[in-house]
Image 1: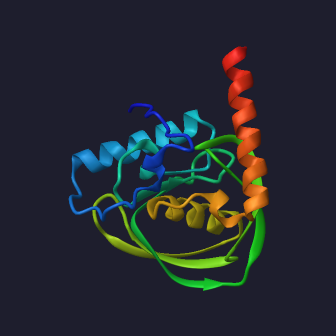
Image 2: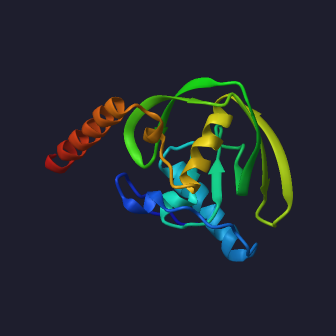
Length: 169
């Protein structure tokens, strides 16, 4: 497995819409393993292919403490949404930044596994937030797109300040 470099905002490649996966082969299995490795090393709970500059509809998630509930979704589609929740989200492409985002409380998602087998899952709570967040990446959206222009400007100013401090350290 390899750790892949994660794109950071405002990299324009984060705005690229991912294409459906058509080949369910050894390369895809290796890529999914690399996504998990990258996510775990970065101490994340979700990661989309777009974030590592691969523009295919692939995402991984693992919200568990023990890192034993790995979930890979290939070509995911939300079939149903229900309710709403406000959750403080962070993102590996926005290191150290967090903001409250409103998303569906429950989602029903159709996807494929690494062999190409189709499945449907019903998720709620934090995992539903994670999947919606990562699916946004596949559509070229990032979580700050959900914020007011004022909140987004303040958050991006904070990100810029953190980067300047890190560069001078």
